[in-house]
Length: 317
Image 1 (cartoon, rainbow, N blue to C red):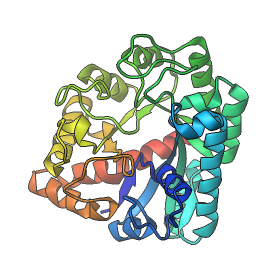
Image 2: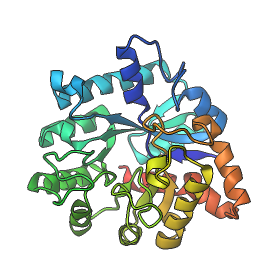
Image 3: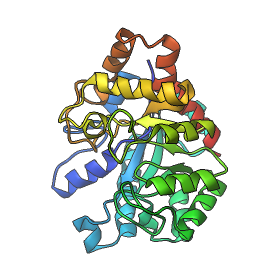
Image 4: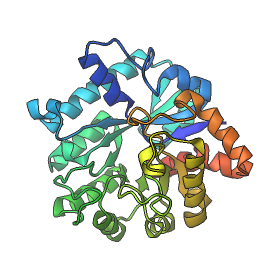
């Protein structure tokens, strides 16, 4: 079964490990949840790679959010150059079919934390030129664009301007980590489908990072997509992720938003709780568990790759 995963923090993990003096990359990834060997063994079609920036981190305090995302982008470019025989960057919709035809892994570059732009539309356009095609508007802190999960307040005027410019550029708008008020602001202003790249269901576990049923329905009505997060803290509140918990959240998204609204957003290499299925190399175990749980072949195919593939084809220029 092929897979498309809407979110991992592997590039940020690689840069962090290199700063500690370790020799690690996508091609030789000890200690990584996602590496090329695991992706190939599991049959991935595409992986979204996030450039994640913690605005309060020591690295950012020493430089700036913009310089940190540039360092991550340079790390990504190095990985891309070293693995051109395996990776195909996804810049336009046609790149999906080209990657598949060439037997390569489609790689979509994303940014997790819109605050790296420091409110500058010019910087947003620079990210686009670097190959970024999806931006998570906030992480866990307020920024120039809006407020994060758990805080009152929605999008700022700059946030609305960013959404409009992202839609013009065919960059995908990601609501994972966004406040409830910000989510509804986006529903009122967005003219194109948007996604939650790595969020789960509040009805099953009441974490502020999760989506309410009302949100899931609103996204589904607009052609949006929910990538279910594999982090135990969002699925059950526990210290380990049982595969059944992932299935429960996937089933809930399907029941609430319809089959076409559910996808995978693992958060691999951003997760600090172990998973029963391990990491990217264990994804076939997810399919086996879905089969045992009564998911139909059509449902499994839709969740594992087809919904995300369609969303990217329709969303990219």
